[in-house]
Amino acid sequence: MSRRGRVWSYTDAQYQPPAPYVPARDPYEPFAIAAVELAEGLVVLGQVAEGYGVVDLAVGAEVELVIETLYVDDSGDRTIWRWRPVSSSTATNGDNQ
Image 1 (spheres, rainbow, N blue to C red):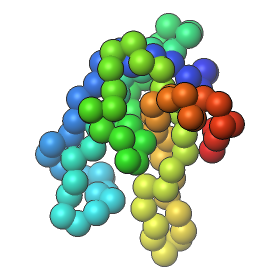
Image 2 (cartoon, rainbow, N blue to C red):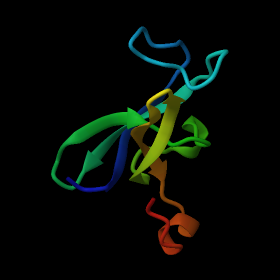
Image 3 (spheres, one colour):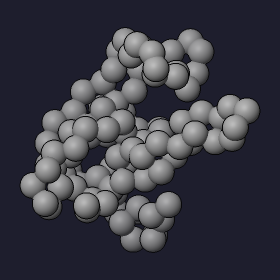
């Protein structure tokens, strides 16, 4: 599947999801969620990258898949894929994580 797509819809999670969700911080901090349409025609729902929120999103804006640490436990890093808005700086600096 494509690593890039366009925002189809977005919102923020103002309330902590139920278990098995593990919050990254205590107390819980809301995060953005984006539904992204890929070139293949699929719409994939996922969290938005750390440091970005709904103010950074717009329907039709390009985003790319990145891998980030969700949390760390005794077994090591627990990673998650997220959608990061593509700006002129991320599009040209080669930072694809």
